[in-house]
Length: 139
Image (cartoon, rainbow, N blue to C red):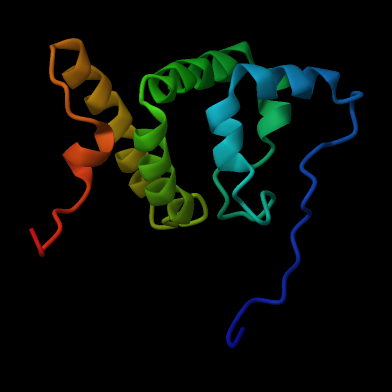
């Protein structure tokens, strides 16, 4: 690809400090977050959101708690809504704003799941896809 960086980032974020069993538990606890992480071709890139994800989960109860809360939010949307949200989120997983906003665009998209869950909790019936997908100009 013209203009592509030739830097190769390590595809395996695992540090080798344990046998991976704990990481398998994290994957089972946080399936949607891992599904997003698995979409990053080079997770150790400085612009990738899930850098050292397994190690951070293993080493910090606080970080693990924050990600468990996010997983609950993401699990609140149906599979069609998840597919739409994931399509919107994936390109932003490696779009870090180095001027101080970090991955704000990614979290703007992920927060749509939070809004969807709230609307669902007050009795709205629209799916995430139908509430945020652009309208078809043909209709």
